[in-house]
Length: 425
Image 1 (tube, rainbow, N blue to C red):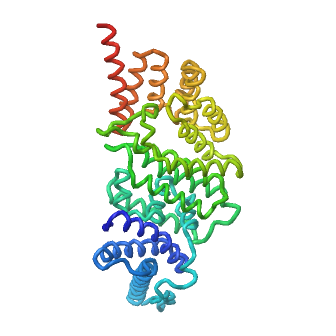
Image 2 (cartoon, rainbow, N blue to C red):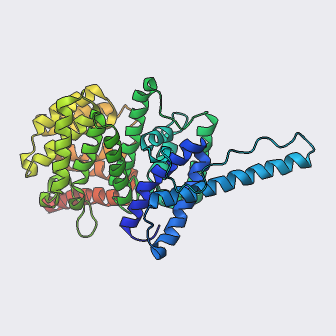
């Protein structure tokens, strides 16, 4: 898209609204999504020169509706030609004509379908990568090229993934309608997980030359805000939004001027975003006071404790440890245990943490992950075992596919090697 960040934000905000109205009206999500993408492209080409129309949402809905109707009529005509050529049965019923010139002003078009779209994009028939891609395309308003770039795959590959996802939804018989109440609890957990993954991939890219991908963190926060607006009483939705805000508040301090990673303990906290910290802290405080406890709330509470410390030395590690104990009970997984081990090291010493890390070596979900070796290196360094820490850092650097993380880990190992050489000399 062209026209600057404000222009792009407008189109991305309107995209799910227009798609929802069109899909609800015509009951064909795949065709509606294609039509909306064509309307967004038309806007990106016309609006910078002609100006944004007075009713941009209505303009997009009108254009998308016309594109969809043209496509349906073309497909219908093609079917009639094939049927006539084969001297088979007479042409079937015409596809019902949708509103052509209403400019999106019917009552149904005014409804907000963002939540319905999120549930549909996170349909259980889809794989996790497909859920991510479809959510970014249909709800986030990102183009196929932007999504492909974010996940470092060719645009053609991402286009196929999105196309297969839409076909899978159609094959599963999914309708554009709110998920029934009995299924909603399980599906909202998937929606939250998808938004969490989108944000995390943006905050710390899993591979490539850059540590962060701002377009993904922004989309994760924007979609979480929208979800919180639609479900203001849901404690876990508030917890996820709070976690994103409190985490993203550190963004400016995470890298030095040369792009190298700055560890949390070494960050200039004066560069942390105070507005984001204030909003995130208020969200999690309110959620903890009224809602049943959940894993996103606990993670947000941990982030809030870090944010409250004026200096790394002032961090209340005992409170963080207590929160990790609860989180490990409520939502046990190896990443939680890995972070729990760091808190244990800070409170009870590195030996206790190393025992936890030894147990994780037997967990195939994380045994080969670079983060396990990176944390091991950190804890070994705390224990004064510099040679072993150096090897752990090097092994972690070999395992990661993120260039900034690789350089950071190699730098830690090199610093320990230089220290050893200086002592020996």
